[in-house]
Length: 88
Image (cartoon, rainbow, N blue to C red; front, side, top):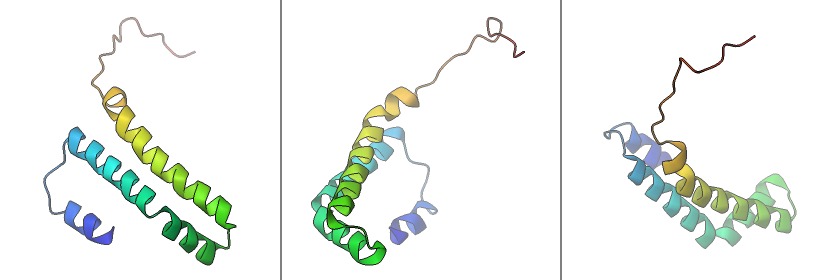
């Protein structure tokens, strides 16, 4: 993770597709290492293993969710300011 962060400062900006692929790969990596990550959470934070497993699973699901929703949420939008209501 630290290597990726360091490299990200050296690279050109990434496209939306590259970011989506990165989130998907991260989700898959989390899923692949779910037990090891859950064990780490249990050892370092003292959480019960079942809670730690759920937390890891949730993290993987969020990666996939954001990768799927990114195009919709980050699509260009036009706003008609003439029709927009003024705040009270």
